[in-house]
Amino acid sequence: MEKVDIKNFTLSQLEAHITGQGKERFRAKQIFKWLYQQNATSFAQMTNLSKDFRAELEKTARISNLEAEAVESSADGTKKYLFRLSDGNAVESVLIPDEDRNTLCISSQVGCAMGCEFCLTGTFRLTRNLTTAEIVNQVCAVKKNEPVRNIVFMGMGEPLANLENVIGALRILTDPDGFQFSTRKVTLSTAGLVPEMAELGAAVMVNLAISMNATTDEVRDRIMPVNRRYPLKELLAACKAFPLPSRRWITVEYVMIKGVNDSLDDAKRLVRLISTFPSKVNLIPFNEHEGCDLRTPTQDSIDRFHKFLLDKHVTVITRSSRGSDISAACGQLKGRLDKVTTGGN
Image (tube, one colour):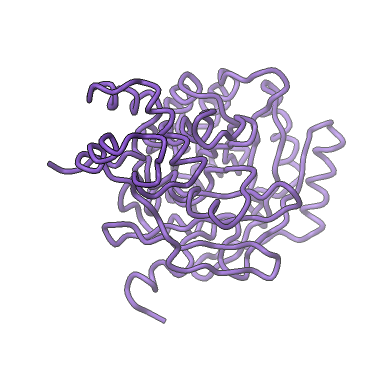
């Protein structure tokens, strides 16, 4: 009988598994705390479980783990982790340092099928979804050596295209008996899969970020093919309907591309489009990369766009590029994956 990976279980699923073996429900919480608060990698470490129970667990279950195959450090302190998966595929995670609030950007798929024109990761076509265990193990691996205060699902892949496993991971991350992250400290970013946005909002409470990047369907169709399925009108309606606790907002991510979406007319349209739901805007100057003809806007264009939003009382920040020297900046994840996989230099 193949052993189950116990890290694929949420707490409620683990409780069902444990009680199905005739054990007390509270044992699941003990195991959960060992996995996500004590970083246990074997059942033998779980000393408040009986030896007989631990022996039974060893027969039917296993504890998966990820070790970084490579870690690259940027001049600004950003770290990019390459994780090799059991089937030989690989994903990347990025730790972005900040005083008392390190943020870990994690992946949800091997590659990505969205095909956004500005994103290097999108050129590394989708291979498969990550399991719940593979998602949470990125956090386990980094937390062993670094404090992590915030989690963002902004790495490789479209999280809502792997909804079931991502929801499982979110529940583990925010469970009081799991990682104990506040729901305010966990953010999921989507290119705009509208039906799945509604499913996410009904299942868990986390921060939502929308990768918007254009103010007309014509432009968004070009740079984000997902818009042909779910145009701006549908995306904005889904944002308006998304359940938000008091004093929370949806983050509108806007990658600024020279001559494509960086005009004052774009800024004016953006203000109108997001006026129907609580929001803040992250302006992200495009990170140029080899093989892409798009260009970074001038600093004047960025400043003018930013100032217009501020003058219209929109909460806005312009995100500084972090980790660009190690291909860890926004939209750059893929890095050396193809070279590592094929043995290139």
